[in-house]
Image 1 (cartoon, helix red, strand yellow):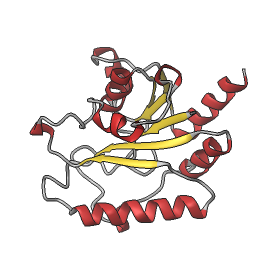
Image 2: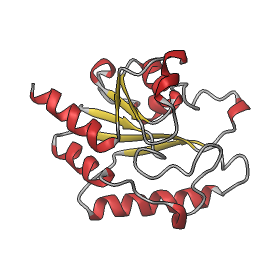
Image 3: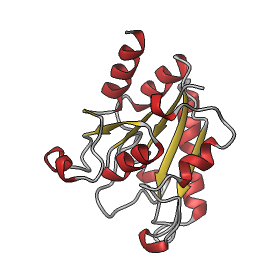
Length: 183
């Protein structure tokens, strides 16, 4: 199975900034080209898995129901435009919870892909943070860091896991992945 892992905030939708969260559908704003990029990946046979830390639930900043509403509306919008996401897996625990799912750990990826035949070394994890890069590296994926505002590219050399590739946004990353696939 051809798969691609995507973070949500800062990849599919605008990230509200460090320490803040998308707490309602009204705050959710798709990034330019993100739905089109998902659709393009689908057209080329990729299954899309969204893997996202959402500690705001455990912090009491928004409810699981609010997160479910955001997810339902996001999926509906993507499907209306002809795209499809196979699954969305969230870690709603606090940073200090000690769970095995919070990125950079791999529990969410393992849960999302249980029973599926995925060649991780030939699969990309696309995200906008060091946690995304860490999760991708820890499961054995190739990683693409997006420069959509969360991280400073000049700090990458200090990270425990370095991204394999750096791209401006999801549109650029997807074009690059598909171009590499064509040779």
